[in-house]
Amino acid sequence: MSHLPVIIGFGGINAAGRSSFHHGYRRLILDKLDAHTRQQTILDLITLTNNATYQQGQYTLNNQTSRISPKKLASQLGPSVLNDTLVRRIVDRAYNVDALVMNKAATLQPDQGQSQTIRLKRRQVPNCIPSHWQVEDTGGDELRITIHGGIDAILPDYRQASVQAAGQLPSGFDPSNLYQSRNHPRSLQMTVFSASDAIYSTGIDWSDIRALLPPDQVAVYAGNSIGQLDEQGFGGLIKNPSVGKRITSKQMPLGYGQMPADFINAYLIGSLGATGSSLGACATFLYNLHNGVNDIKDGKRQLVIVGSSDAPITPEVIEGFRTMGALAEDHSLCALDHSDKPDYRRAVRPFSSNCGFTIGESSQFVVLCSDALALQLGAQIHGSVPDVFINADGHKKSISAPGIGNYITLGKALALAEKLIGTSSLQQRTCVQAHGTSTPQNRVTESHVLNESARAFGIENWPVAAIKCYLGHSQGTAGGDQLNNSLGIWQYGYIPGINTIDHVADDVHTSQLCIQAQHHEVGTKGIDAVLLNSKGFGGNNASAILLSPHITTTMLTRKHGSYSMNQLQSQQETTLERAQSYNEQAIQGQTKPIYQFGKDVLKGEDLAISHDEIRIPGYDQPISLNVPNPYTDYSA
Image 1 (cartoon, helix red, strand yellow):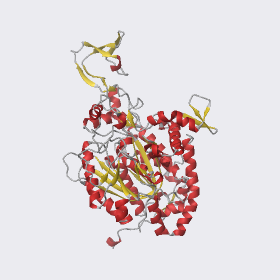
Image 2 (cartoon, rainbow, N blue to C red; image 1 turned 90 degrees about the vertical axis):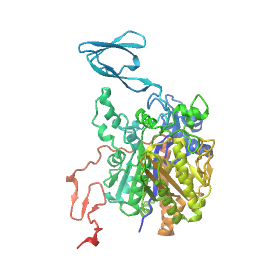
Image 3 (cartoon, rainbow, N blue to C red; image 1 turned 45 degrees about the vertical axis):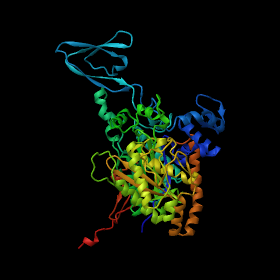
Image 4 (cartoon, rainbow, N blue to C red; image 1 turned 30 degrees about the horizontal axis):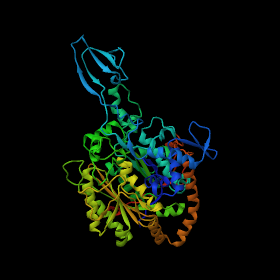
């Protein structure tokens, strides 16, 4: 008997803000919200970005002592904090796009014993002066450098970046200030915040979950597509020797792509269960979701935390994608609009006239559990994920070009969805979260996949969302952006439109699709299922089915009966109250992420090991060693 993987919590952070309680989704449809809900999301952004503090029931602007009402605070700071979200010009916190350091090699090989004199701009002189350089300050903007002996020199060169837009976390939000970050790479700092946000959003104390489950009934599947490539991770490991800095003891281990899962296990929940990270380029989140869903379906685990965390806004990563011709460069954006100034807000234009994708950073997590455990916990039901399908592209010429695997993944997802919700519901009450990267190639290839798949299943006018237009492309976390934003549809009734486009490109396949700039108003129960679609470099394709809360509840009622569901509803009152308490405290900036460094560290001597089980201090339930033999057909 299969178990239905139910979503009981979700959270994260991306360019739209905090994901739990739909705040990130709300940012996308802000103009459709009532005044109170809009104010709550703006207040959440204000405290998240450290523009105000909350004390003794009142908000106070930073560096001021006078109190300010929530309404006035939202009105006063709302425009600026909203402007500091979504896709926009890269801020100096990341790096200076007007003075991008691109070192160049200069061969300076005078005869042995001689010297050579050059002049450099002050900004070209490295912070760590080589011992064979003699620097003379002659005043003005230049320094005179005398280089002794025969050497090859690497001279710093500065130029303006040709890609200056990205989907950055809200300006002022710094996850490193929320816990003892100990020089962690940015994506791991984001992991601590986001996984905590997801866990808190359940409204269930982790200790209560831990008391019910044997340690090996929990799993964590999380990672990212390219590891940690900033200064604190692999980026510094590779770069530091060439710029005169030392390699630290943390850069090597903290650079690995599976490290988000490792951090959750070691510092958040103390998990002893299954763990790992499946890397699949842009489909990485859905690859990890596939692992979690299969574990719960097959009864191997009862609760799984799934996620991904990517922080790719670094000069090196952006330059790498730029040289591939994949990114939207400023001059190309200007050419699209026949303007001399790029419109960064509209840098991402899925399925319209476009010129490349735009990098984003994001960290997204969901808490899944079996349907039986959800009832036992009195958990919230945000939806469910019955399956995720993964297929490669087969033979290819270019490793980064799209192929045919996505037709298989989406076709299988639609086929199962039809069996679960019926043909009429599939055709009339579903939508698709497109990968929607904003490249000329994607707009043609993905629209053909969506269009032909819809045609095969009799779907007409299929609503298409492409939320990268707001958030940018967060690489391996893109599927998490899609999933967590989709949950908002069932709370507020809108599928976000592609608001950066003013037309659909002529080469986009649209006979079965509804692609529009305006939000699709569908009502809170007008969509039964969302199809999540990811197409990744290398031939990594994944499509997932996300069922609505009302469909999920109907399925649970069929299996468990009305009495059990009535009991669940009664238990949910306490769960919802605890969850809402967290949300209110978070809006006020009163919460801190979970981070338990060095807590309850165990050694082998602490365990009680017998023939049948292992008992572990701090865990109520033992780990059973009664492992079933799946190979009885082969036994003597």
